[in-house]
Amino acid sequence: MSKAPAIRRIGILGGTFDPVHIGHLRSALEVAEFMGLDELRLLPNARPPHRDTPQVAAQDRLAMVRCAVAGVERLSVDDRELLRDKPSYSIDTLESLRAELGAGDQLFLLMGWDAFCGLPGWHRWEELLKHCHILVLQRPDADIEPPDELRNLLAARSESDPTAMSGPAGNISFVWQTPLSVSATQIRQLLASGKSVRFLVPDAVLAYIETHGLYRA
Ligand code: ATP
Image (cartoon, rainbow, N blue to C red):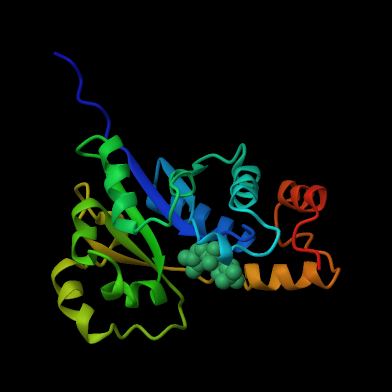
């Protein structure tokens, strides 16, 4: 008798990653270890071309994420949204991921509390939990009151222990993290004013930024 394939646990962290920095990477690694994920994929989002930072193409954002995770166990890059010719809805991305996974594989969509609160504005948002679990990255000092429209969903779907979410999809849970105080906005500003961003991004990302002269005014 053939053995059933092992169930995989895969996390997805979307973002513009303009550029990727140590805040993203520490957070991703901590979640991957805490949740026992086989893989946590950083998934750069496409943006309308006119909204890309001047001189930083989507392909540069992608290349920097690739540099950042090269050789890092559990972290990887998923380029599917950048390969499409228009910005994708999360539901499309999840459907496309699901089509590649085994029926029992677990998919965890990571998002901050702010993003979670905006969920009812997302395209076909009621269907998201058919494809994934939602893991909300919550700051210890944040207000944990959910907006009214999400109250019922939380009552029905939340699981207090994130590591206990079972099955391929369908639950919501919270991971408490103290984020490093760094943002891509701060990094772009430092570079535009000729300052160093060393130690805020991995050395390989710094080298890429310097080689390609990115974000300089
Ligand atoms: P910007 O400053 O351009 O808005 P950003 O630094 O917030 O960018 P994004 O690419 O928008 O980066 O973020 C992708 C994801 O990473 C989001 O879910 C965001 O909440 C999270 N994130 C951003 N900064 C940090 C950080 N310092 N620690 C943990 N998570 C972070």
